[in-house]
Image (cartoon, rainbow over all chains, first blue to last red; front, side, top):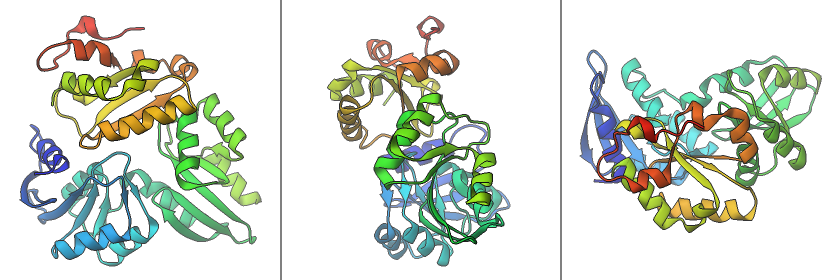
Length: 213
Length: 108
């Protein structure tokens, strides 16, 4: 049994967990929750989930309800997200899977870290179009014709390394958006953004920036 | 693998950790967590790039959640004290399952 499957099963077997899980085959587990549909979930160890990985899992497991990127650092490419959503396969972190099993919406669940921000940016008036390049990187077209590339920082207190790593991993962004509502970027993170050529900001500042751009 | 085992494994596998302060924090210190939270405090640039490569290999079969801070960020946020981080070196020196004794929790 793969290490990530062992971790997933161990976490579902903790005292007090309403959901229980058993190994089915390979990376596939079955999660059972009282009064909710069973969930067949693949637990992936990938650092990056691209469309090939997504297709591979879906072809391997016909009854797949949810694809879980177990690593906290797991990155989801936009094509993979669109493929999974079009085929009614939920996707996201282990925490997302646990919540989806409890809520009974595994087939439509999306990464809970980015879900609220995704909705926020899509529903904001000045925004005309959004292309999700990665789970945390968007190309946002405004009604004024301006296009901005925005990367999300989910950390509570984004560090200089978080800003630099976002830039190094995903390429240049205009804005690094700290999506954690309680967090505050460190002064070093703001400085790292200035050095790289991007602004590090929270939603209130981003909203104004998009309104005026 | 206990928290002690993980600490020993990382210190053995990642020689560059000698140039950084490294800690574990979070649920793994008291049992199985969803991931293994590791804080690394030290310089950025080439030394950090090298360390990230080493940790990537060492964590191939572990759910490491790595947080890198500059010394000034660690001081400013008081993260080590706030999150009750425990030095990897201290963990690695312990034997057996990790149910940490209060005196081993770093308070500074």
